[in-house]
Length: 81
Picture 1 (spheres, rainbow, N blue to C red):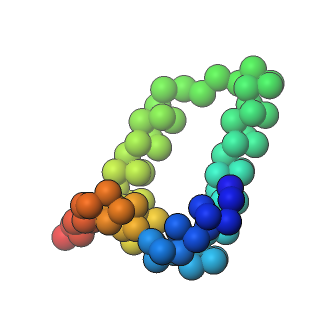
Picture 2: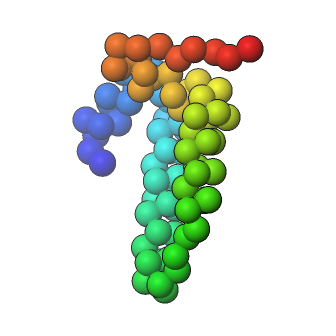
């Protein structure tokens, strides 16, 4: 990640705390995936389904996580309810 990446995320409305959170989550996921692969761990298909359901449901309500990306793509996030 370069300074230009951070600047772009700030332009999209993320603050430093949100950027750091995204970086740390990505690092943790990367580490966990590499460790699991190195140990030969296989994840059941249901875990992938659970992740996809979270991204389509609860994650959509994290405005700071979804809205800047949707807006950058010319779309908008629809609130349910």
